[in-house]
Length: 194
Image 1 (spheres, rainbow, N blue to C red):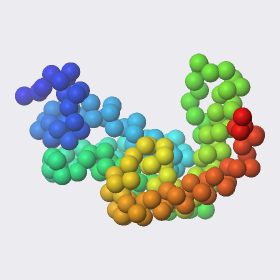
Image 2: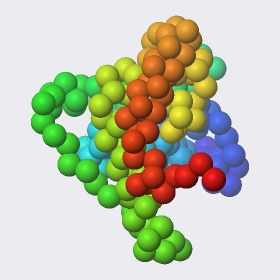
Image 3: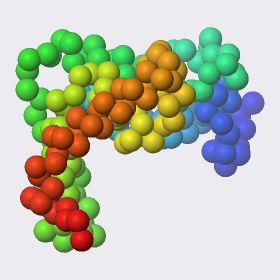
Image 4: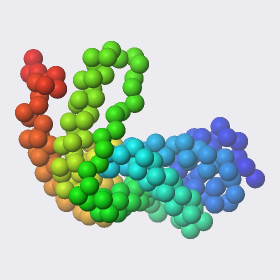
C-alpha cells in the first residue's frame, strides 16, 4: 500500500528507500528530487564538468535504487552512502582522464544580480574551481565535502573511509593550499580588507 505523498515527503531517506524497495514509486520520486541535486553538486565540484557530473549523479542514484532491497534501515545514512558512491565514481573518472584538461563550465546565471556582480561571482567561482583542481584528489574531496557540501568531519570520515583526524588533516592542508593559491587574486576578485 502506498502512503500519501505529503506524508512521505517528511520521511527520512532510509525509510523512503525501504518503501521504494517494497514497490512504492512515489518514494523513489521523493528520493530522486531530494538527493540528485546533492550528488550532482558534489560531482561537479570534483570533476568541473557539468555533463560528467550529471552522468555521475545519475549513476549514483541508479546504484542507490539497486541497493534498496538490501538496505538495512538504521545502519548507515543514505546520504553518507550516496556521497561515498559519488566520490568513488568521480575518482574513477578522474583516473581515466588524468592529464586531460577539464573544460570550465559557467555557473547558471542568476537574473536577480547585476551583470557586474554575475561576472565577479563567476570569476570567484572559476578561481575557486581552478584552485580546487590543483589539490590532490583526497584533499579536494575532503575540502569539497566539508566546506562546500557542509558535511561534518565524522560523516566525511565515513564517506572517505578514513579517520576523523585524517579528514581534519586533509581539510586543513587543502585550505592552506587554497588560501595560498588565491591570495594573489584577492583584489582582482573584489575582496578588500575594509
